[in-house]
Image 1 (cartoon, rainbow, N blue to C red):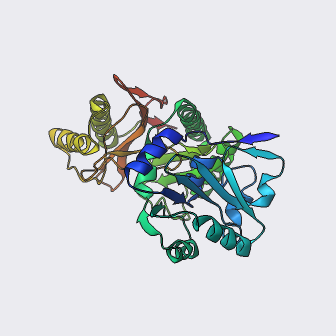
Image 2 (cartoon, one colour):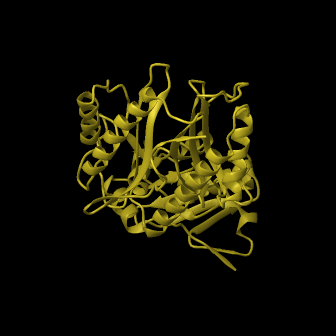
Image 3 (cartoon, one colour):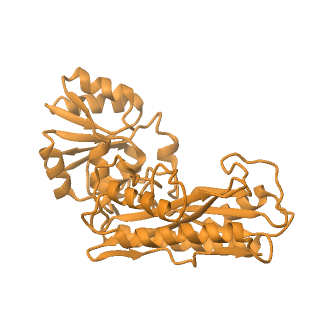
Length: 367
């Protein structure tokens, strides 16, 4: 019998945060939070993403009470032959789910926080029981920001695969190929190299829109953006490198790239437990000015885990760096022809500062 339990969830810390907030518990419905608290494979990256696909008819929820105990609400079929660490409330269909949720929350009183994934009909059930509802996304973020040893290893593995894919794409690219072909190749290589799913594939030829697939072919002397996000057991990587479709990178690209890379390296040296996100953002802005660049960016990067961007390193953030957070420093500047050029590197926050997780050499590669 297979045991299903969460990888990163800390019941003691959850109890402290929930009870310290004056809550009876927090109800989560987003795929990442249900997976985080229960281990239920509801993320679309897993072997059979049927629970994610049928979430409109067979909802999944997890309730964490003020003692850190997790109750999982799910379709009964997923429990067959499996031992769950959570308490289970099961049902066969949507009507049964509503009945079971109603019955459970008759026994709950006070204030309950909910995340963004809780359906409106469930909010109606809570309100009908007289429960006070509060927003719980920030609380869940605080729980998930600091990673345990297993989460860190999964993030390392995800980053390794993304960088391997980028290296293979650099070797695969050729003049005249379509952007669609390069994107399809990236998708295939993410899976064939061992990741479970694709998070994002941001590929651009020159200054083209990387979010919308245009009918383009790679021309000589173009700058190619390769920004790859892979998913390994739910944990996401996010790494970027550049390829120049020529023999020698023009100075207008190389000099700007080196300036931004220097800023990223200096900023990485500033990261330490206790430093605030807003402080690091302000340092990034000052480094831009020192290098003659305009600090036109909304964030200096982000934390990363079960989602690509957990929390931004922004001027308005009230977060502080803590040991075992995993952080992406991500900074760019515009070239004269409108291409955003820079770098994105991943770091583990350590007691003495930081450890770099990403390993692919930061440079502009050439064909």
